[in-house]
Image (tube, rainbow, N blue to C red; front, side, top):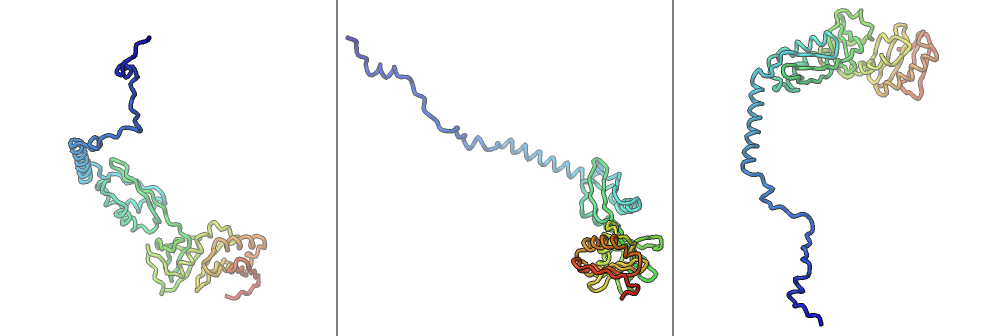
Length: 272
């Protein structure tokens, strides 16, 4: 008869069981916190970087020595370089959009600009020029005006320009670099798309009154636009009608103030 095992022996024969753990062990909070030494090193690095920045900003290490201007015409680029002359010698790190905008504002023909710092010594400026769309006449004076209604500069020889004319009285305030009042500004906005409109006539005069805009050719033919709304649509309709009819070759008018109902008249005598 087999000998019986004692309880102690049976317990010793069973394999040891490994306790089951769910998930990863959570590290102690102290292990996640930075040490005082790492904090001191980080603070020293930040202070050092700040000191280097202040040193570079207040010394000639990154002083502007070259100003490169791109965009616009050669004359506009030269004006921008002259306007930024005071920035030469200043640290690139001290340059900002506000100071540059204040300087470039003295050049009315610049519509917008962007700049870049090319270390160690170059300031690069890219300008977008205003596009002149008409010649403003006020007595003997002539001014070049953009499509935004901004007076760009005086025009000493207006007879050399093929742009449309807009005549205003002496009561209208005209200042180079400033915008025009409402009525002449509407005329400038109407003249802005003419270059791309493809009208089969050369617009010699832009007329602007209360709620009315009109384009007049040298032979007296007139395109009546009505108000300043949907100018491009009205010009597209006028282009199609005038190309189909050839009406612009003689005095008359085309009224597209209501684009859905254009009116064409080729009478030799047209009410003004």
